[in-house]
Length: 241
Image (cartoon, rainbow, N blue to C red; front, side, top):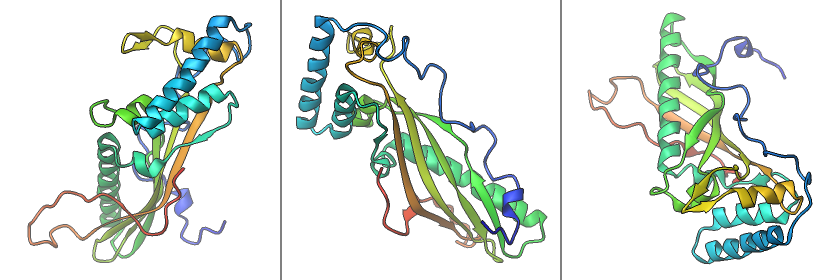
């Protein structure tokens, strides 16, 4: 791809602190898929997953239901999460707002150091961890609890200092049950065994929203009034994952 302004050769805004890959330590099963023979109890646990997924769906917990059903389905194929919906979770909103504010500050600093004028900078948060609060969204907490997210795009600084960031929001999760963990008093080990017995399968959760845009005017343009940074808007139809 042509790069007439050479922005690919310049380190991106906001990259410090982010990971190159979305994977986290421990994102693998205790034993390989299908490494042990299934027992009658394993089949009963798998049946309980399907029943629970149906109950969650009836309760309106559609994201949690879909991911549990996908695990019990055993295909191991990637699962596309509704990243646009996930962006509405308070923890995600705060993380996105923090990164956008950082990009804007770094873009304005470079812009001032480089003699102002119109400038374009790459921006990339790298992969970062995000923890979902159960009280904020029971559905997404049951579905993911935690995940990795990334923002990437370009920041355009106008000659007057107005910053416009065009970007996308990506999510990733290695979906599994960890031996030794539990929630609501229910141990995860029997569910983790389903993968090892080959009757359910871990998978990758992926998702992306593209066409996001964030604009802030030159500092001081609002006569000293400091408003909170708005949430990014979608300039074109999003692609829920």
